[in-house]
Image (tube, rainbow over all chains, first blue to last red; front, side, top):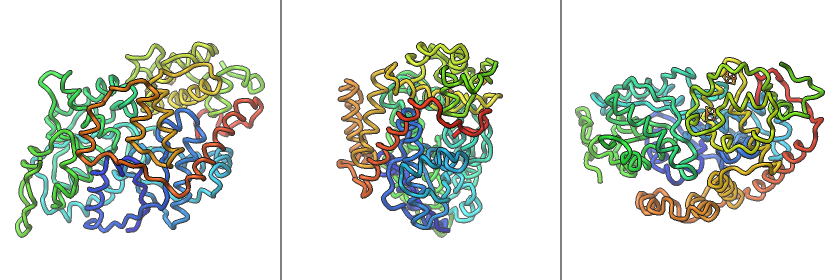
Length: 299
Length: 204
Ligand code: SF4
Ligand code: SF4
């Protein structure tokens, strides 16, 4: 399977472990990803919150480039990028006036390429994940955190349901791990207010982490760099305000899949998180017979 | 309550309707949007209040309200509204309108963040996070916030030291220009074309 790839700004920097883990799991899953040449930032919240057309035109240019470069589908692992590409796709397809304004602004024809999120892609590949798993993650309890942008607004939802999606759990089950049942998996973490209104992020992310902890999760799994940063990088600040502290590793879905596929945790970028993943990794059972042991120590 | 098309542009609700195809008059104040809003405990105007004030055409208070800048666009309100009112899209439209009219300024930090973010894109086509943090600090005055974060980020290889510039940078600048021009045109034209789907089911 060949597919266009839009890493977005985060996967080149603060979320490079997301890109690294993606890079090592696509091979075993028989997916070839091709980065779209000369892509630009999707504009994220700052564009759509201040100029609607800009919020659509920036991602529309990426859709156009993808089509020009021969892609029908574009993988957008970042939930925010996915959401902006999907918003542009929908605006161009459903609203001729906006479509015309967008094409005029970008000076290109938008074409027909469609975005797909990593959660949907991996859910579709779940049978293959199960088949290729060298090290099933039995006994690991996982809280699947969807957040906002993969499921809302409903018309941009890439998953199976708006209020009760199951696709992340499907992927987690394919790795052999156990998804826990909890309440806050669709709540907002505070999104783009990480720098500009940190207090809101701490309040919202704390509720999410406490709920995951209460449900007995060993690890929280995400598919969005913004959620990751709020729940991992901000966890120290959250722990100060939370009874009993807080110590829950937050990892990307692709990293969990990589572990099940027997990939080395360093190659998966599991040493880059702020909350240490060492104790979590040490609990993962060894590889199945016949596989060489992947290192289990982490710095 | 309904807003006649001819009178629409005169009210803020009419302007919202023209720009988004959404009709604020269809809100029946059930409050479901606000029940799920994660920012409702911090804002003086919750999403159903915003819709109510649009119905009353309380333009000044709405456009100068800090609350519209505290919306996270988490879209919970939009997902749950039984009437497809789409409060999240309406709030986006109000922010844009407030900026264009110079009627109100968002809280300094949030304004500084949006400005710094968009500046980065105009400068290199992509977000250079280190540049964003510096530029945000200059603009917001929050010079010491998160000062401890950078070494941790660097140590983990999470911050690029130099921006990566895309080839089509000129193109990106043209897109910014075109969108800014488009927005000021559509603000000044009161007879602009109505979007399709005026019942609020279709929103771009
Ligand atoms: S949920 Fe919809 S109808 Fe109910 S108050 Fe909110 S906007 Fe109005
Ligand atoms: S989109 Fe904004 S108004 Fe709506 S629920 Fe989320 S934070 Fe509240």
